[in-house]
Length: 356
Length: 259
Figure 1: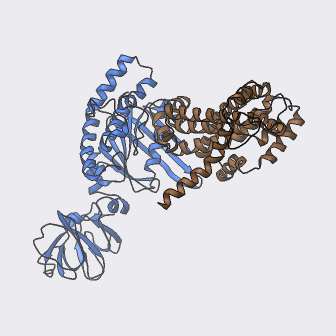
Figure 2: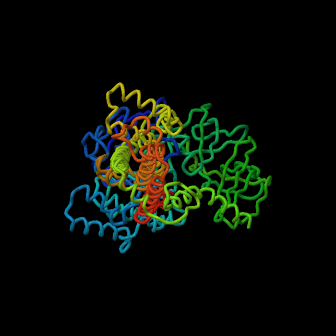
Figure 3: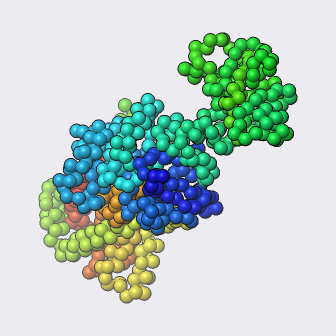
């Protein structure tokens, strides 16, 4: 097991009567990029602020390299932070912004020059050192903020929604660049985001948060394919949730006579009610009525309830006879023309179901 | 057409009294006649050589500079506390800190007079400085506050994360970014203090009185244009201060709060 660089032990933070973060236990390992992912108000930014030392913890301990830093003020923690608003110093040049942390460390002038220029080269901003932040584009400002946070080689890099203020195309570019820089520097990183795509594509591990608690921690694939809770299944990938009742060890009834086979790690007890989740990209849509259970396994009839055009794909929501809805993604241009109310057949592969 | 006429009328209305004072100050005879019947600088000579004006001018410089320089850090602390501090009843604090703007000068002057008498400070110039600090403070707080509002609180956190202790953050980040507000506040303080009359009248003696009070006393006793000459000098001095300020710091940037 790699060494834990940041450890949170039973960390809690209250604002008056509101509990923003509760009983948080989390370890971030050497060199990894861990995302804190969740909707706004889930406590992810509070967690970052606790690690950075911007706000004190109400309870629990925070360790960096095994050392208890819970009561240590932010300026003595030696971490690098990139803010959503960039928080560049508007009265200083790009160079002075980057050199700020080095000057605070009382480095010799020549060393400051050398390191600041190398950091600016790392983020591809050579030759911009005399400009003011306001003269740069959003993406460039973001890179200055990154250089400023990396230049003094902090133990941990904290990123607070660093891409949220950029437009979509730039955001995707910066996402790749950020990952490359993080890898090449090899710095342990905590990345706060509400964007699941960002978290899935950037992270070594993702910690999904909800209501101030951790829902699930794991590799992106693990989180995506084996969500442990309804919240995770719903928040990441937008699964359809179905209520069902077990009628056999691997068979469930979706209301009425509709039964489907599911692959589960543990056999189900008959009569037990279960909640299933299924990703829209695993659902297949075909024309006409379902041919019957003998001809095709897990194929049901339903009617088209909603169509949303997404460019490369069409999101098709189908209502089953019992009223439950299943979303499917169909590649565009659609091989079959669909209209609202039309009857279609849905195939729900047995191994695509996630039992929550 | 009509718009332009209105602007000219307004301008005339605002500047006419000043123009009249300046014109009268060059009158060769010992009456404040308008229009004047000649040209002379004798009243300027009289104003500059009148001992009580000289003494009051020195007092004015002391009181105005002292009060403004004291009010600047106090007002800045107040503005920072109002915007950043964890205050209960922020609006109430703001109202209290800005309230001298609505207290009548006579009431404030009387209050200071009674307090000073109780403390035995009636003959002291310190009394005037203290009173002027209280009078200019709302202007300083107001100006600096606007600058504080424009500060991104994340800048403080950024500086801290980069290793700057709070006082270094204040010196390297907060203070430089508050400069427009500090400058505007200081300028307001200078102008308000230099022109303050009502409160000063209550609390000054023949020895400690400042220029506006000395001028009033003179007008009560004499009617020659000396006072017009001194007023003109006063106006000229104010213009010079504002011009220099604009030249070196850019008043536009101060009032547009350009960062």
